[in-house]
Image (cartoon, helix red, strand yellow):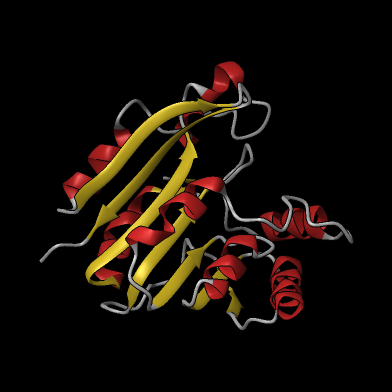
Length: 202
């Protein structure tokens, strides 16, 4: 199962074209500043290699580079990757941004201090995330819940692509990760999300 911030699955050529079309503007569609959840959580993570999954235009990847991480970021959209690289140059930092269809991409094991995943849900990727972390490494993730169907202005409309109550918590516990923080909440009356910080402990 997987989902992005759309009504459809992520990974096809049509999805690539759709996201290219969305990002093909001078403006940064989601802005240049990082998500608050990431910004408020970053002090929990020792510096090292970071992977930003489905990074979009790079706002979170660039923030991590500014905080001293060695950052890799992937996205299905070449247009997004170009904008991420441009933002990194604008901010005077370096990231390794590359195109990847996460449905078919294999994360390298025992590599990262941090993996982030925001508003992209691919349930079978979570065991890969754990394996890709070094011992003590952290995942920071936030995405939509089914409650978003009631209040959300954005996000998937198909329940299959949304998290059930406590589902994200169970997904990480099922792969043996230590949950440091978990919440489900509405944000500004505009979206309903689940947020988690989980650690690989061996």
